[in-house]
Length: 496
Figure 1 (cartoon, rainbow, N blue to C red):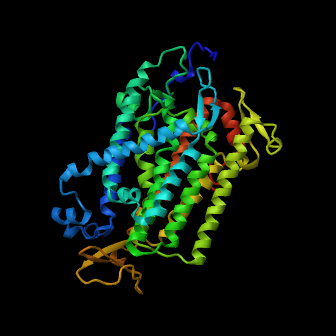
Figure 2: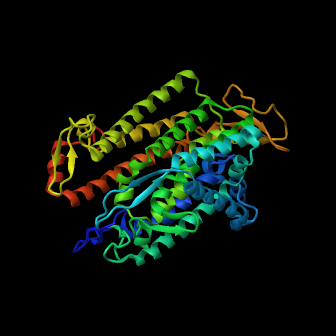
């Protein structure tokens, strides 16, 4: 394919630091993994969510804390396992094989800044449905004891460690390989505008190369960023939801509406993104951001583990919503999804075919660069109206956990497993220890975990909007200022 040559490719014009520069990159690189471990230990099925010592720091001791959080008997070495590592690598190998053998849609990406277009193969939806079909068959045959579900639940901590190590390794691999990018774009490789600041650690974190690719024997060429953007993190998120459903049933003998609703809504969100997979090519992640530790960590660790905290909570505290509350949650979801999907569809149709009857009537301004900015329809109400729909949907993934928090009380007396008593407590029997899950003093404090996502996601969207705003100012200059005067609001019409 012929490529366009530029005297000075725009991709090489660094635009400065983001995320607080090197100091912010350091905090995220080491702070967020610690947060994942803290949540795993402090909200658990051994002592509570949060653990009693977290509620009463004055009673805290190292031995008590170790007992309450389930600290591995082998100490820090117990955070990982060779057996778990090999099985996790097998899971990732399966996703690659399915990508290779299943048919898919072949699409060209947007034009690179230095010329040319990359080609992509999309079959994440069919690959995921194949994986789900295998798990469904195993669940039908073996129920909640299906080894995939028990393995994921019982080795949660070790899987977390394995995925974190993989994220660090992948980030180092793409950083080192980015120095092979040569001027001229003969291989359709280029550096990300924000990924070559000169600070080695920051560039490793933010991503030096825009679209790193690798050729794997038998598998063929893989676009690392696009492949990991939708899998394995998003698919792992839903698989963990399913594992938590299985654990709830195995523990109590029933499945609650709350965990089913959260899992169904999250699965719908993920499968919808898979079905609309080609639309990812116009997102900031693909067109602007380099691929470094930030995105690797999000794909391998943050998405599957943090996004499934609500289902993990409900696996231990099986709260029931009832018909009225369930309908309310679905209504909020419907409103959010309508805004999110219809606005994104409108944008994608206009970008790909402005003459489409569904968008041909929309008004726009044309910039000096030749781009067209919508000033009517959804995008005339706010510059990032899709973010509002996305955030509304985030609430439906947290509301079913209610006023969250629980404590686990152990006893030698054996009550009926799965029994629910008037105060909202539940009991389950282990091989030698019998436990009762009550809210008690933990009520409300568990919301730190079960509502973390909606707070985090709101901050993320505002930060993303600020980054996109800065990018557009650089790209469009005075045209963006003119556009901003017409479309005044950023995310929430009339408010922000």
